[in-house]
Length: 165
Image (cartoon, one colour):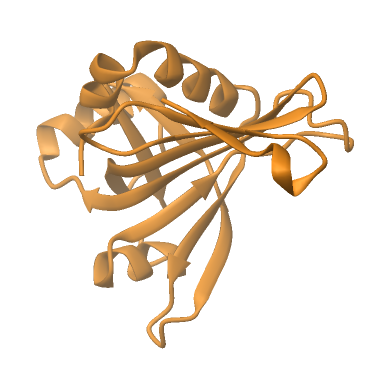
């Protein structure tokens, strides 16, 4: 796992694309794991500051309890309106680590005016993906810590898939 700052340093162009995509809409879809291991999908706002990606939640919310029990998550950027996929799909996955530093949480509240009390989770990235259309091809870009961005391009036929990077 790696921090947002480390991701930005390793892949600045891809990180800027992902951050911009999350910035287009306020609400996104968070996937967590319930106690029984089944998935839970809920709405969530993502925030970028202090060189990190943050997830804030109301105290004792189901999604916060899920993450406190099992920090694995996936966050899908709001796809927007219509079916055109103008901006493509973006997803980050990894672990959400609860921030316990009260001074940092106070600084966060001062900058965001977040309601208190709240849970604040710092994102540790395990994977970042973006899917979009380029001409007649679907392009899937994927990044994992320690590796460069990998792209797979695919047309309408199964034979046309090819990897880059």
